[in-house]
Amino acid sequence: MWNIADDEGATVTGKVGRPSSFEVTINDKLVYSKLDSGHFPAFDKVVEEVKNAAQGRDVEAVTEPDKSSSCSVM
Image (cartoon, rainbow, N blue to C red; front, side):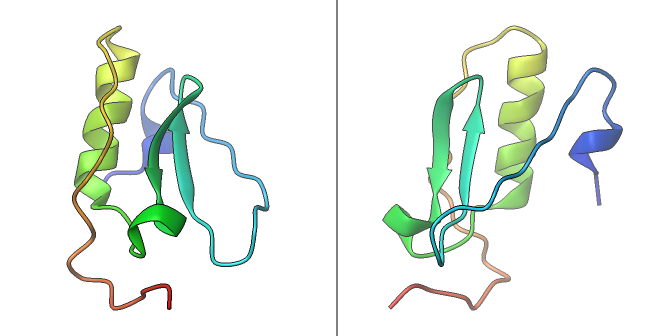
């Protein structure tokens, strides 16, 4: 598994949000919201977007859910 924090130049921060929330924001752009989708994001897709941002490319929303997670918002 790749750790985002181990990538040179990457800074990863976290903060407490609303209950049941998990949101990914890259360069002030919301990339994924568990509150909107009901699932956690596909980790590899989030990593891909972090790499895009690190290389100066545009960041796109992650739409693919994590298929290994059984967590969902009811």
